[in-house]
Length: 255
Ligand code: SF4
Ligand code: SF4
Ligand code: SF4
Image 1: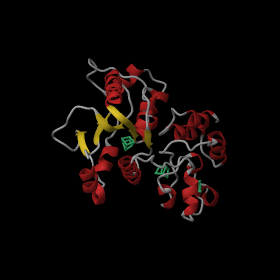
Image 2: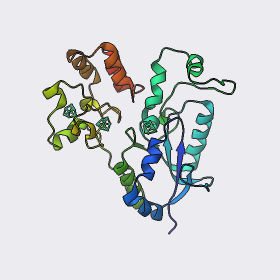
Image 3: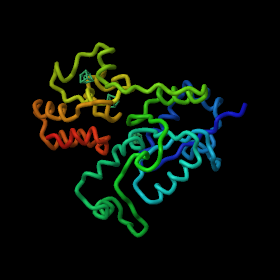
């Protein structure tokens, strides 16, 4: 039986999610043996045109060129996966959407050669095309990536979690950072799947996986104010990774 063909693409991003694929040392060779990686510029010298069975897209879409490429990729891939916060929600690049500057002013701040530059606000890829699965987080979670590839190989739907990071935090029997130390943790409103990595290390969840289903971000924003955060700090928290989403927008606009 032919192996499923896989491709990895990158738009505006830090490449950390693709790097996380290469960091899968214990299972990387098994994956490479089970699939046919046809396109992965970061990892391979020889790359091939589509079609592909599964396409993983990292990065936010921020330019007409990227948008054109994304539409072509969508046509070429049976299953299209948003890989990481940038591709899922706009991620860190979407911070620019809330800067109050024009695109040109931002371009001038970053680049000296502007003659060929054309950018627009940063969005996740489902702003433009249909997406079949989301690997959330900054970077994406390696275990979820492996689970998704295994599910695809078996023809099963991958199991993603829609509850909040707090559920995973409780399962790990952590003391709640908000209740015990007054640390402004976003676990209550953030989608689970990372195993409550940050709270388990005594650090606040920063919401990198974007909103959990049915989350009440406005209520959490008001709690952060009660904890002593400034309005600007609360707004920054909700706009750091997923400010484009309606759920986290409510948090940013509640204070
Ligand atoms: S989600 Fe994070 S790690 Fe992945 S590409 Fe974007 S900034 Fe980099
Ligand atoms: S520390 Fe954060 S993730 Fe853990 S229970 Fe408290 S709010 Fe939820
Ligand atoms: S705890 Fe929050 S910030 Fe940390 S990895 Fe999980 S979702 Fe991301």
